[in-house]
Length: 254
Image 1: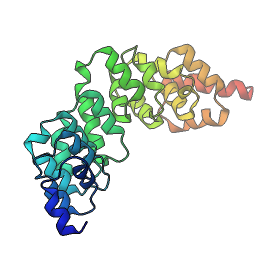
Image 2: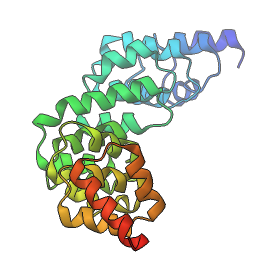
Image 3: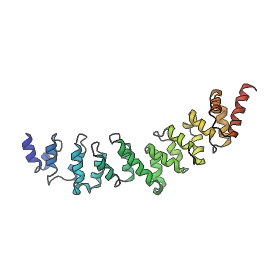
Image 4: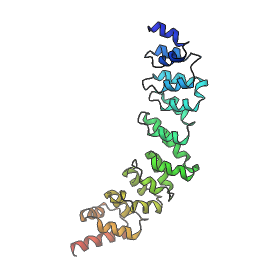
C-alpha cells in the first residue's frame, strides 16, 4: 500500500487492518495511527513492544491521558529502550516494587533509568515486609543489595551474599565503613565464597568486629607473603599486629 493511502487508512482502520498498521515503518503513519479512535490499550501495548519505535511516538503515547492512565502502558513506556529520559523518570514513581526491580535489571533500559529505579527501591526498604526484602536480596540489583546489607537484618544478609550480582567491591566498602554491624562481619566470614577472597580476608583480619577465633583462623591460613604485606600496610590495630607478627615469627622459627 502506498504511503499516502496508508496515511489515509491510519486514522480509520479497524480490526486486522489496524493491527497490520501497528508495524508500519513510516513515522508519519504511526503518528496518524495515534489519532485513530479505534486504537485501544491492547494495540498501544503491541505498538510499545516494537524496539524500533521512534522515541517521539513513545513520548506522544505518554502525553495522551487516556492511555497513560493505564498502569500497563506506564510500565511499557518506562521499559521501552527509546523512551525519552524525562518521560521515564516521571513515570518511575508510579511503578510497583517488583516492576521497579525488573526495570533496574533490563539491559535495554538506559543506565540512568536503571539507577534511578534502584534508588527508588532503596528509598522504600524501610517500609518493606521481610518477604519482599528476601525476594530483593535473592534477585535484586547491586545498589539494592548494598542497601539491604547495610540494614543487616539477620534473615536477609545470607540471601544477599548469595546473589550473583553482588561484588567484592561492595563488601569491601561495607567492611571499611565506620558502622558495619557484627552480623554482617560474621556472615561474610563464614560465607563459602566471600571468605575465600584474599582482600575480603584482609578486611576481616583488620575488622574490630571479627570474632577472635575467626581472625586467628584466617591469619593461620594466610600465606606468609600476605601476612608481611598486611604488616607493611600499617593499618592493623595494635592487637592484630601482635597476632600477625607472632604467626610470622612462628613460621620462621624465631
